[in-house]
Every structure is written in C-alpha cells, then in structure tokens.
Image 1 (tube, rainbow, N blue to C red):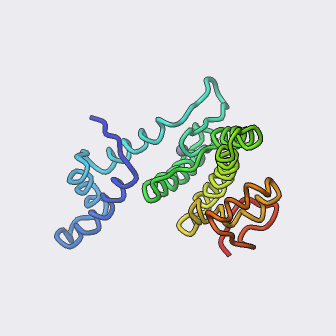
Image 2 (tube, helix red, strand yellow):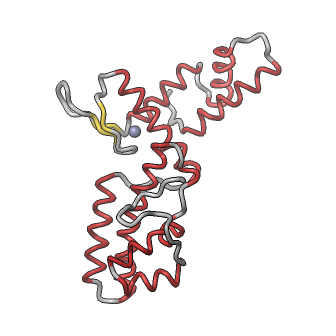
Image 3 (cartoon, rainbow, N blue to C red):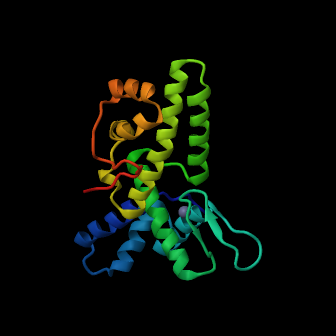
Length: 209
Ligand SMILES: [Zn+2]
C-alpha cells in the first residue's frame, strides 16, 4: 500500500506522537512515532510513512539518464545530484519548506520557467494590448513574475510568513513600475495604493528589515 503523504500529515503524526507521551510515558520517542504513524496515517510504522513521504517528493524529480546528471525538482525547482546523500537531504529540507508554505498560503510561487513565461507574456500584453485593461493585466503579470521570485527567496530563507501579499507587493513596487509605464502605474496606484522605500529601486525582492 502506498499513500500520498502531505507535509501536514507528517506534521500531524509528529504532534500526535508528542501527545502520546501523556498516556504512554514508557514508550520511546521512536515507538511513539510508530504508533502515531499507524493511528493517523495507517502506515505500518514511522519508517514506512517516511518512505511514502519520500516517494511523494521524488514524484516531482526528473533525473537524466547516466551518471553525473543533475536532477531537477519540478515542484521546488531545486537542482541536485540525486545520488549524493547530502544533496538529497538538502533537497528534502527545501522541498518541505515549499510544501509547508503552500499548505499555509494556498499558493506556490512559479518556478523559473513559469516566471519567465509569465513575464514574457506580460510584457507582450503590456506593449501590444488593445485595451487599457489588457495593458494593466500585462504589467500585473510582469509584477507577478517578480513577486514569485521574491516569495521563493523568502521560502528558501525561512521568512515567508512575513512576506507581503501580492496586492501589498504591487504597492511597494509602484516606484519601480513608474519607470516601466507611468500611465499604467498611475492606475495601479489608485487600485493598490503606493508604499515607498520598502523595496529599493532596481530591486524586485522584498526582504525583512
Ligand atoms: Zn523538490
């Protein structure tokens, strides 16, 4: 039997294992984890649960044929040597951060190719859009590409809970957007407000102060 295990499942099992300490003070931490894995997820033990979780994660990894190829995770965009244990561990840590953030935010920022496509399509719409709304949408798409990059950095570095929402991010980027298209940025200012000096000119990444 193989289940798809989410980050929340693993978290629930760990929390339950802690609570079991009250009724089963004689069990070791490992045994409590096993018991929790059985009760919460129907696994035979914690080891099996952990294997299910590994499999859930590796579904997203593309590994080229042959040795010394660089594996790529389509979910968290991490590139690593999949036959190198420390790399595997780092990937799992990064991957779990993205799972946790996605479950909490209900949103996962685009990976590199998705962000580049979003920006290219956005620029095209912004410069060629027939209607004003199209051009506004174009600039918002470009901004979304930057926002996703910024949020990814925040997730990788562990400060994503402080990262602004997209709407707030647009207001912070307005000084920058003025230099892209003054007309459209004026309309966005009316919609989102304007927040100066939160993101330096020339920068697109938000970071905590
Ligand atoms: Zn990953």
